Image 1: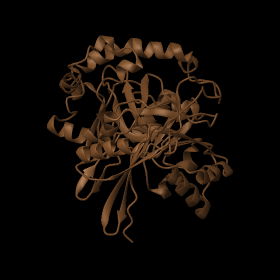
Image 2: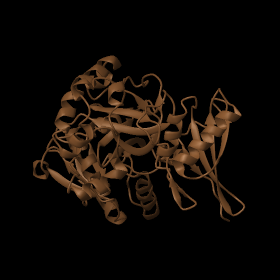
Image 3: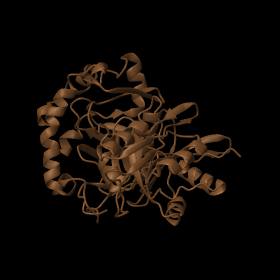
Length: 410
């Protein structure tokens, strides 16, 4: 399974980068036709956004903003330059967030990830992601059929009927959550049903711990992970190298400091921000609220795109202290006011019967005067008083956490 889906996956990284940013200004100009993007991008010369540095100057659009934006401008919040009737399917996900599906053979760009997991032409695929209102089932379905697979649109649940389908059609591949695959396998074992035809799996939508990976391997199933969302489809996918997730083609992935749009240094944990080069439904710097980190070098499988570690937690770390919300954006503002500071972490604990905030900050210029100045900024930005602890560079964990609520009430 070391062969690539096409030549795009193995091209020189510099060639890919040049191609993406050559195409980006046209995508931005098309996005700006939509009133929501027109307002957001009005102050920028979009023809000059031809590098990562220029892209990083554009505003971030947070996925958490979408329900409110869409509510005031149904159905897509003014962020889609074409009418809802120009799409093939229309969905809704919890939030609610409304999502359209383009009229193409692989609108969610999932075929690459399925191919990397070993799915091939004429394979029969059991797809247990939901087909009801949400795009999950269609994301996998479209990619599998683009590869020439036959798909069983099973959806989730109904284990007994799933077992009947497996025995009848003998699918070689599975799509769904890892948890439901285990339910199917355990159900088959307890009832004497034969599901041995399943040899490959593409799982997503839930944690996939090593214990479960090992269990599937012990049952002769090669299972691979994908990082996908209902907004963007496939963002990154695992390959036979088992060395992180390879970023998909035709998208630009940035990893930024939570609460900002500022890219983090290579290897540092940050929030995933995606720009898609889809002229029909472009996403411009959509911050997904998930944490990851970039891996150095290219994958041993030969694919040359950026690799990420996979899902490493949530960047949405707002917490309430003494009745007021404290957010990562506020911690980032403190960092902007004091450029001599590096990584920051605001920890909320309990002291006696009161909340206590402690802002730890990395710096090689520690002094009582600087600590006092940072404490004053902490108070000014959050309207709450807190301690400041200055530490040496490299002392804080590289886990992307900016606000940590460590209060215990037991």
